[in-house]
Length: 177
Image (cartoon, rainbow, N blue to C red; front, side):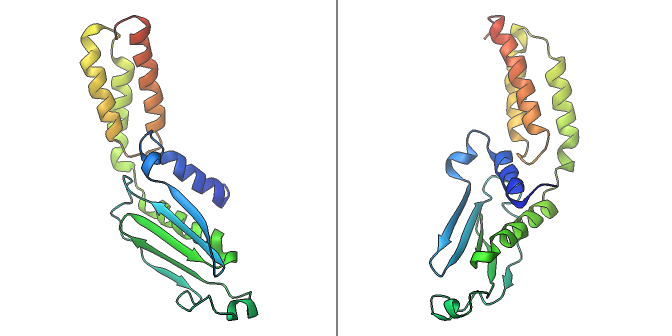
């Protein structure tokens, strides 16, 4: 089990598919009260339409811009919620890791790729068994589209994409495409 940061990095990397990361991603910034805000885009992920139960710790609704924060610097607060396709977490300076962990726990509890396992096995077999010839170019293109449909959260998607590119490269080397 890795650190909070390495888990967040892994979640981000899992969704980088050449398209998603150009318009979606993770933003971590500071607040002037002081504190942190993290925004995580769920657009195009298995989690986009899953409900997230709002989490509040401490007094996130109070006006932290008042001088009382400086009088009580040990006060810890966190507010996490979902707004459309974004997870948003705001927290005191000491609560960033707790906030990220709340999201990671929710990711783990709500990302079930089991339903895709049979499809992945079939695609792996298809990729390995297709002959490298002119007649199979449409089948290779169809295979590519089938791989793209797989959720990025599936642990075998990246491996399957790499396998496909190796096979496609064989077509290129033989001058077929």
